[in-house]
Length: 175
Image: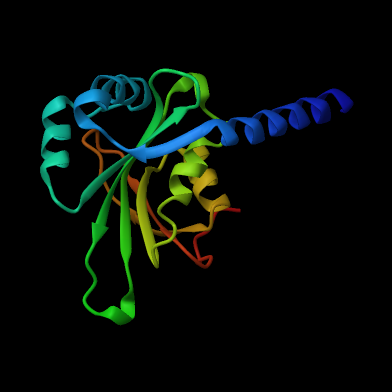
């Protein structure tokens, strides 16, 4: 048990150190696209191709954030998100996270948490996770998201999606 505690402590220290070394910035599509596409292909069962990224980047409400490590070349993660208009000032701002991915060599170190934290300044944040991706769902719940709905056959391979919202815990939050 002591060995497991020591390992967890070491991982926590590594996360804290890494978070100090991570820089978040808006994407430079010309410079970052090849690396973004490589991370995409390593991260998703049905990755977007260059055409989908081109359509995404052409829409004015869409944004992309990349994570890089101080002193290293290249990006280690990215997040695509959409700023959504609300019907009144009372409702505030809303953001939908369309895609988030971290290079497999840099996962579980807090990079995804930092990127999501950059958009939780909105009044509402939504995202979809594959129903089978319980690791991602646990991360999102730990950040204050709750399961809002299940969307049947949302993905191109027929898998259901879990629609998650940021805010107070809802009735379907994971245990």
